[in-house]
Image (cartoon, rainbow, N blue to C red; front, side):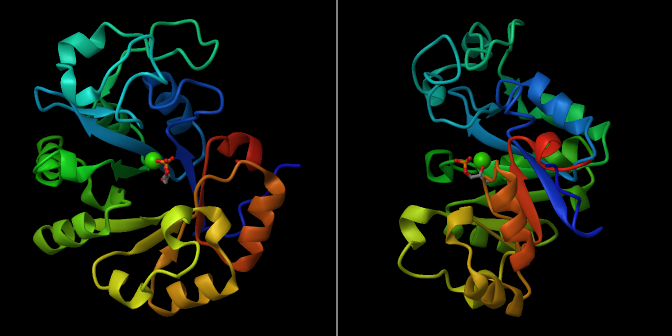
Length: 247
Ligand code: G3P
Ligand code: CA
């Protein structure tokens, strides 16, 4: 049974595009997601050898393309040769997308872009490059959230570029035994987005007490989604927004 959006403010976020049905982080997946009545599109960013920001989740292209090797060891031109539709039976050749191309695509839709910066330590100045691209495209800054598992990276970026919205991701591995320090996070971020298995009433109460919004990842079944919504989350990150919700 598909769920109803619990309230107007609740955020439904397509994870890596409509990635249940299309190859993740490809134009097809992004476009399909943006055409739905969702609120945000989540993307992952890495950087090529020649310094181009590209939409991809893993550090390597092994899992999602017909090639092998690390993104940082390929130029954009070399990466273009690979087919990123490998995971599904999607027939078309899917090219890797640059951040420029993603921004051009997203500008046509009134959705928020939830940008996850992967491994920022590997890419000096990746934060500044993202901001520069957003400015270059005149992308509405109120429709951007930058998030990362690297909390120090988010803290620094928010200090340097205070006009954007920021989120920190909270992994099960790191926070299974302890809860994040919400009062510290609230000084530089607006969102605390945990693995959904970390959510309990205490987590929600403490985050909300600091004014943080909570959008757990990655929820793909309606029972879990229903339970989390009843507990009071502010949004949900899912591979299948159209199957989980009546949009
Ligand atoms: O947006 C949060 C979620 O995407 C974090 O985990 O591994 O899917 O990037 P991952
Ligand atoms: Ca992600």
